[in-house]
Length: 400
Image 1 (spheres, rainbow, N blue to C red):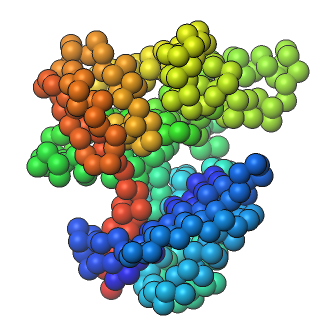
Image 2 (cartoon, one colour):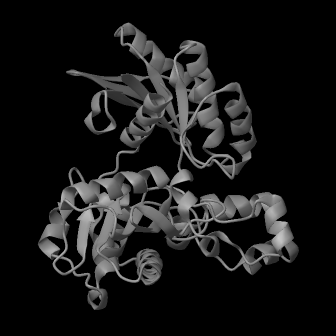
């Protein structure tokens, strides 16, 4: 079966084409990414395609995800590629979806209800779904959810200490995110270590150039994570504040004249590393300013980021009651050894110690083991699209 997978970001669209008859034997035959989708700026939007020996980069205006998906289908048709199923990533399925689901008129209507839950991502995914339905009528399509991996969180982990009726009425609870990434790296770790997921205690750190979170995973199941009702709380991120005393937001509105929309903009797009440093949301820029210019605010931004991450790792180890594997993934986790070193320094008490040479040499192209103590510390590239393809193949084969 040939499966085309879409993975929408807020300003990007990635795709991969897989072929195979079992989830374990899927082979990627093509891939690509549309960059700067809907972005106005000095740099031009472009789309890249890779198929066989071909590598194509086309600079072209891409006004939205509808157009980006249409460009992908144009490329697929010019290569006469057969598409037998189409899979989509949906960031937030709310309480309506806790597993991969085939698209039907009923599920499409339910997905519409989920659009406000992740306004930077869900509407983009829905737009691509409609383009795909028009382009390939009759081809089975399905949706996977980042929140589904965290459907195993226990009641004590998802419950907020609000008036119970209010929480129930409005669905205020922890959902968790980055689930496809966590599923990918946890399965990769088990394969690399030749271990069964059953009995394995894992803390995984998904550290992106946008969002970042950490999760406690036991027996392959999520039991705690740092993000919550939305992707805003938890770790300090590039432009998101992470955990914050809610009184601050209330006082900004009630006493200092800010509107809720302005506070939302501040906490999501003007805070985090950018807010502390004052000049960049990229931790690599911050490290350069700290080391080359002695920038005190850059040093503070890095120290605060690392401190919050170490705090999260320690609390997740406590929830697990011990640790077998610590995983770093996504762009920052894969490519910034200084972050890994800062988090692991002083963690010998729980069996974490880095091999400094291996840590410096690991840059995320393949699985790398960088630990030097009882806990195995791994740097693992994630492959969300492969998880989406495998989930869809299982679903469709079960339905046959």
